[in-house]
Each structure stands twice: as structure tokens, then as C-alpha cells.
Length: 433
Image (tube, rainbow, N blue to C red; front, top):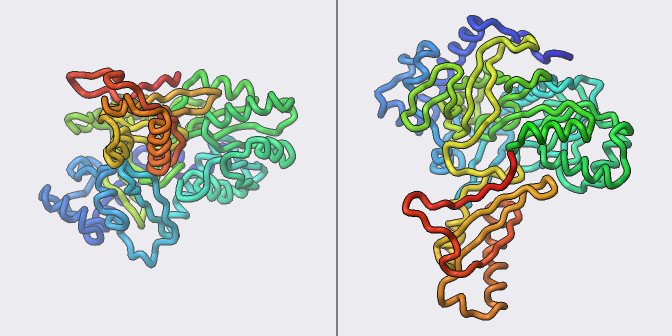
């Protein structure tokens, strides 16, 4: 199957503009009358729903920030009654307050649709066996891929993450043809496979859909060589819908956005001005079919660019370039969003160390590791080793509880962490991405 939905994936630009405009106008009306947060924002800018008549008018609308979802926690941005919400997902927040997203039945249907398009980009069809090794639960990864695979009519293997030996056994025995997981875990599987003496020729794997963390062209080549597959990059945000916001096709020349559902813009992160096609800047999305949590001009903080030329594969949908960085200080570690400020809040809460810390991220054996260095006070420096070890354990436990990932904590001597006259350097990312 080359396309899942050729009507929309190969639509002319004129027709797509018509569809987007109609859906944008309806969405703006909906949020204005159903979400007090948006009504207040629009009124402050002197905008009414009637002012939005075309895509050109999109830039008149206010931006939405991740902090807005935290400030209205948990359901303040929902646009439908809670009785119509059939699914709730959440992602970790900077100070323990999560970002909550809700879906109506139609939203779940939309999610399945965009994920079906994503999987079709990897060559999935009803003959496929798709092994979903993303996590299931509040994280949107596992269930998002799952519903898309079912929409196509493929056989879903909902194994979730971890237990690599079992993953490989099932991959071999069940005849998995498409693997869905983080790229680092795919490479880790390849290593474990080689150690177990399983040859790639013994598997039926054809492709992998990999996302939730940054990865390099070299890493792609290694995955493709060691697993003998086509490896494509997928992109998603829980706030927009989850996985399915964009996906590469076999041409690997940018990620196709289902723009009949999500309208992208590229802005200058400093001036907030919309940039012309091809410019590199911050990616912004407006959802135009979502019912439960429609978002207007959501600032992703991801740095990318947009290409509106028709792809070699025949799809006409706009393509975003691979994300090259962030306009904020967020890290993605093992698929989890991590902000230095989260660590800072933990240290301030405990209050037994100096306020100086450093996050060191590395990729060892193709898995991300986080090490947190924290400076001791002068008084602590002379403390007995057991007390220092106890405090390290306490900080580690609190960080793991807040971030949702394991971290190694190391208490270091006073004045060890470099000082800066400008913005403090909080992160050293050693990953070759």
C-alpha cells in the first residue's frame, strides 16, 4: 500500500487550502465559545471569530504555550464536556504538574487515521505484523501506534517496552514485519540479537517507525544495516495528538504532516514573526479537527523548516525537516521530556546542597544515561561518607519520582561546577546526535 488516504495525502494545494480554511474557521468559533482561556486571549487582542476568514488570518491569533496547559491543569483547555472525553493521557511536568490531554471518540478516530498514514509510509498493510515496543499507559506512544495499526487491519503485537529477550523471541516466532520503538532501543535490540546469535535473515522485519527521541543519520544507517530494514523517522507531541503529527516516507526527504488536521507554521522564536517557506525557525501547530483539546498556534519549541514541494513519493502534504534543536532548554532522554528546572526544583525542595548543578547526558550502548552533579556546601564537604551517600540516594529517588527516569546522582566538591557570568551552563549533552 503506497498511500493510506490518497484523497488527502495527494490533494492539490488549492484544495488543501480550502479544507484547512473551512476547518480553521470552525475551530476558532468552537474555542471562542467553549474555552474561556482562549476567549480571554482573543478579546485581549481585539479579535472575534468573524475576523478569521482565511489562512492568512491565522497569524492574528494568539500563541499557546506548554505553560498554558499547566496553568489550566487539568481540564481548563478542554473544549467539550468531560462526559464526551473517552481517553486521558498525560506527560511529565517541570515541577510535578503534568500536561494533560483529552480525546473524544472522534479524536481517537482522527489519531488512528493519522497513524495509519504514518504506518503506510513505512509500507504497512493488512498483511503486516506490527510489534509495538513503545510504552503503553499515560505516555501516548504505544496506544497511538496500536490504533493506527488496527485501522490498517494489520496484526498488532502490543508488547510495550522492555524485556528485550522476550521482544526478540516474539519478533522471531510471531513473524514481526514492522517494529515501532525508540531508535536507541532498536539499536539495543540489534546488539542483543547479535549476542543471542539471531541473524537478521532469520527475521521477517522489513521496516521500523522510530521516534520519541533525537537520532542521527549515522544511527539510522546502523539500524538499517544491523536489522536489515527501512528505518523511518516519526514525529509527535501529546499536546497535538501524540505520534502521527509527521512521518517520513521511504524517500526520507522530510516528514509529511497531515495538514488537513494540523496546520504548521515556522516562526522566529525571538520576534514571533511568521517566516517564509524553507526558513529555519520554531515549529508551531494549530489543530483544526480536534474536539477535546483543540490548540491554536501551539509553540512546540522544536527547530525545523517547511517544504511545500511535491515529494518524489507523490504526496503533496507539506514536509517538515528533521528537528535540529530546541528554542528552550528541554532535553529528550529515553523518550521523556526533561527540563533542567525540574532538577532545580527538586534540589530546592530538599534544600541540603548548594544551588549549583549540572546534567550530563550520554548515550552508552545506544541507551541514554543521565548523570546529575550537585555541589555540596562547605559544611557537607567534611561530612562522613555515609551521610553523603544517603543524601545522594535521597536526591536520586526524588529526581526519579519527578522525571520518571533513572538518573545517577553525584555530589561533588564545592566550586567544582563551572560558574558563568551569563546564563549558567546546566547541561552537557555528549550524545552524538
